[in-house]
Image (cartoon, rainbow, N blue to C red; front, top):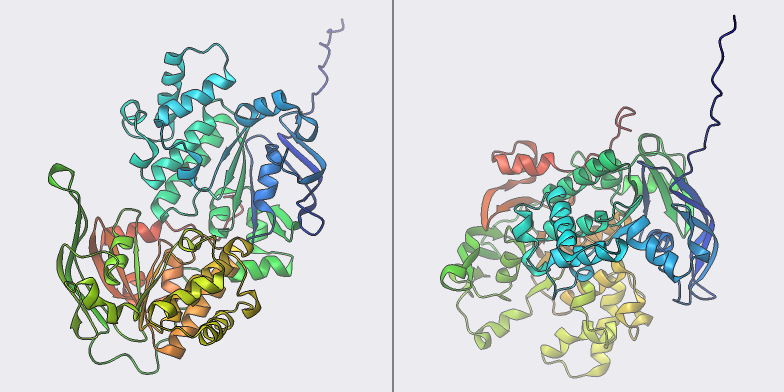
Length: 546
């Protein structure tokens, strides 16, 4: 007696969430940002696009959501996301794609969120657009639900807060919550952790991993931080000049890269086990160039009063670099601005070259101003977009009383050359330069006044690893040549270890640990310092982790 066999259902192939075939994006006849790029991304998988600034990573991310439509860019090839042909999609399909099928988390959440509306209202608006017929109350409940899901404490109350009332890490979580509101099949994260300290960065990366595990969402991670890619991605695609240089499992690419460019990229990554800054031939002696004792800075009054810096004491000698590390909100930037008297201390003493400058009036401080300079974190906002970079670098010279235009122009051209820029670009404007080049302009401007001390506030946080290495090497060369004292503020502990002689660790406005690089990194005494070091992404990936 034969047993009937049930018919076998035909296997339905599981299509990738993203298919990119021969993608080319050109912005004019001379600039091809992406050149014949192809890859696929399956549900639940994470692919990291890694490369230097200008390699085309963000252009690819924009192409997945059709953000180049109507911009004048020429887009060739085929891009399919969740079954939607992005290139031929009309307005209605693009509206469904953006937020419903795919969502994007931008690098700067403060500029991506509307400053006038509560966070919860912005999330609810996205939900109602993609879920027609949803009541306001249901949309608000969904907003609270996703905020709670991404770890916002007291989500119902905080949903009524505006973006400026959130910290940087909380704003990034809110942007992720907005992206997840409609449960998209693809999440595109464009440098989501660049401006975050290591502990918040670790939290965001853990969150993205948990969400992928729970929902099966595919993740395209755009980053110049190879450590972040190592921590978060299943596969890595290395880009250079708009083309794919190398692609493969993260463990294989990181452990045994096959392409010279990938090896060059990895060799430029600062590491906690990398070489230390060479010890000076003659350690600094004599009086400190800068000395702070019990510095304190308060903002606001009464119940609204906030103490940003609380009893900080430190010294910096000529030719020495003091690194300052800590989480967002620890008071690093406020301290840096106080050291060059861009902010007045509420209390404490500040001595420069033997002179008490903490209480000097602006007129009394003027002779010391040119010797105390600052390199700001964001060169875009610190440079006037309507003035050429030559004019910006010339400002300190003119402020010091130099009126001879020929001498000023000659001095500026010399400074541009010294920081590795073409002097003939004197009349070019900031938007014509890359991020690393604009940071070099900021350094040239700081050097124009012939300073003795420079405070660098996150000078390399937004730069790719090779440009980062170039800028830190430039600062080291200038310091050796000019005997500068440097205060290097950063949230990247590996970079600080590489460039500093001594390190101060800040938390909640106080220095919790201070000492030589060898001591603080090799045998940290404070639990907070140990927690910071443990949160730094590891570059190595084992096959099991992949």
